Image (tube, rainbow, N blue to C red; front, side, top):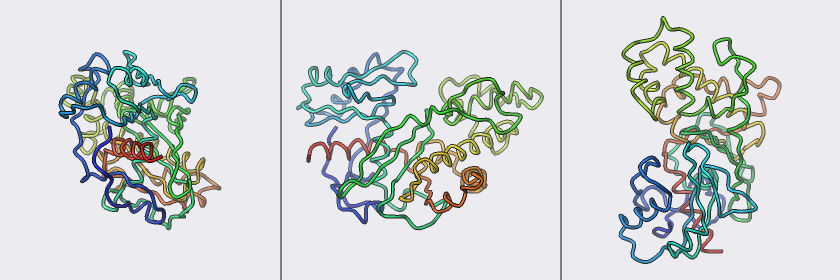
Length: 329
């Protein structure tokens, strides 16, 4: 939904003049609406408008959807990671809510546009080399799932392109990882749920190492099991081992993304998993060692600036940014 006027300029866009989206001080973030607490997306929108005390229909509504948005039918999307099959139909929202302009974008398209709102204090440099102004930008982000996208310069701004790169094949590199003869999507391992799956695999493989207290907490949690592993990774052997496999796998896939896009404008590590487990990305070399382990082409990756984003609201900010681009076209 369109909010207050855009503020300021981001460090990322200091060389390009664009209509900027708000940063975190420009608008109030709404509370989260958990999918399992609501029967449909339309119900959520009605609740949001009521709680926001909105009387007139918004001018424009941009929805970042965690699933593919078809090029042939850009008004429909089905969420990839919701078991009970939520979908969004933009045409229905326009009719039911009276919103003249509804746009659906992939959630990582919103994440990509959110990069254009970053301030220097909102990210850390993991590979601090100069950015190339007119080079592509890319992001990979692990959270509930694993998303990837890239941006290319377009006029005075950037255009963002979605991918489904998180669903490429995962390749184990050690004997204790998931065994052969089984196709695994990278997202099944490099995500919050993936971290939980790694721990479960290790607990089954090494039952003698299971800490009963930690395991009981893990078993009693439904949707945030990865958080239990992360919380105990500094003190519990299996959780630590799971975290190491996760971070190294994340690094390998980030390196794959860097090879595909050669984003010398910056590769940004986004999503919630990295900032929530920051010490394992910054105080250990697991992530960068795995990222740069690309044999003969490692030098090409050393020229890519790599940043770890600390804020987790880029999707909302990116949708807000995109809504202003839609309005001002």
